[in-house]
Picture: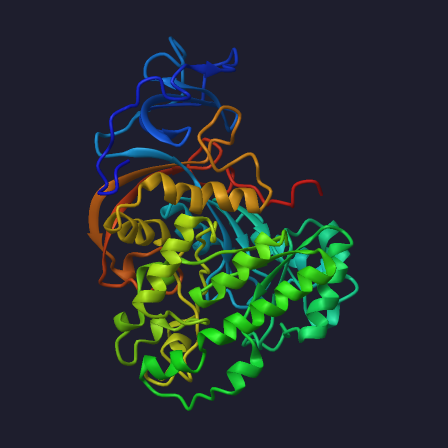
Length: 469
């Protein structure tokens, strides 16, 4: 795929050009023919699916010769086949705040956006996922309501330190913590000593800590009086708040050897510290989000609290630096941080950034938003698949997805990269029709999605536990 969205010719002798298969005796469930991302390159291919798994892949008309299939799909000339996206940062909010989102609406939005696997954050549901009992409550709420695969993060809060291994053994993918107040009373934040304690505990069973990294002392030094001006809000959560908190996490990793990850990195000012930590051999990674790559502070209108999130959207130079960090490998993932709320909360105070609930709902639109900006920068679609599917799958230990390859799960999405359409928030599958992308023309269209080779449905989807549990 070229940077402007056009398709490149099939490379002669490229890897994966020979057919390979393990076709079962029984008829296939699905055969797809058309342009597909195979071995990192777009080529004309034929893919066979049986039992939810890719069992044949090769050049068109050769991978599954004479095979019967329950369904055969030929892609249109403007479509390509991608692996389903893996989004490891989604706030579903059910149970307890299902009026904010919920498993049925969140997973429907995911499927509509090409996301076939998501991991649910331990807040803002009630109860928060900070005990095995709360995890089982969350799983019960999700059962039979999901149309894509869903797994769960646990939480690390002051009250459950010393018992994190119980949640780990129950199958959570790791532990989310806040280093500054989270905004909800039932999910307390860790001070620096508690952060180090959590990391030491997690290192003992080779778990993973993921951190909302803003430093409360820096935030306290930049008080915010509220108002409709976005610049004032952004100034109250400056880049140094991210830098200081990330430096605390790095020091904790250095002391304990625990694995750690920084969620929703907004400030490029923190990249040198992360780069140095990895050069030191420390096991720390970071992600960023579509809204930090698509928007700048100058895009936020007065009173535009649907753009409010923490850390905030920053300036154009910062956005450029985040894109460069992705290209350089300093950031390896783009995930949504889908964090919805009701319209009443999102616009509380009539557009006052001090009163409105923070968080951007973008689960359905992430691929299109990132592709719109990437294409303008001459970045190929195959790079986005690495950042939004393969990379998050590796991060979560889900080695059975994230690529179109023999033996991988048939989590698939049909994408039309050159299509264009304006977003209308009322048409989104999100429960609350509020979006920072409302009225924005985005490039690309998700035309169809399969979960384990089937149309998205409760029968096709699974509730995931951490691999190895």
